[in-house]
Amino acid sequence: DAKTTQPNSMESNEEEPVHLPCNHSTISGTDYIHWYRQLPSQGPEYVIHGLTSNVNNRMASLAIAEDRKSSTLILHRATLRDAAVYYCILRDRFNNDMRFGAGTRLTVKP
Amino acid sequence: DTAVSQTPKYLVTQMGNDKSIKCEQNLGHDTMYWYKQDSKKFLKIMFSYNNKELIINETVPNRFSPKSPDKAHLNLHINSLELGDSAVYFCASSQDRGRVDTIYFGEGSWLTVV
Image (cartoon, rainbow over all chains, first blue to last red):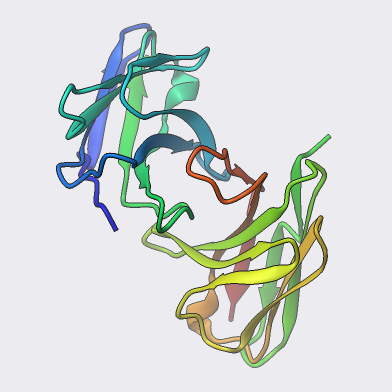
């Protein structure tokens, strides 16, 4: 399985942008980059995914490096409700099932 | 309407008992999963079913047996419960097993074995 590396934890102030990094240096050309998050006491929820181009949706933006060996999840204005564990996951053609790493615990300070 | 629902949400039981957790999805998806999140918060896939057929069976003790009566349901039976089975169990579903399919998770079932 391709692996991802994320910081264990990050802090942000409310109303400020947050950039959550993810390294995936062994990514293959057909791997999709997915981001999920898990709010306290809830199941994981989908945030965004991409392959090569940057992606935007109502929740976040995903910036993918040109060599695809890293990506950054961008929350444009963090709110207290964005405090969660954020998981960066690669999904490949051989193993399509979601396999989670340790993720990044985001704390948002008021 | 809850897309993926699990029951019970909380379960406290004694060692050696047999228990079941039920899961239902109303999204019309073909694939369902069970994940386990232990005390260290690592989420691990246990089983994956596609159209009622077992696809993934990770190295899970055979005391754990999933049962899928139809595409919309995937129940988890656990026999002879042990202390180490205490965890949060998440059911999930997706349209298929493709690389872009979004996986929808239930809210979890908190199992405590005493």
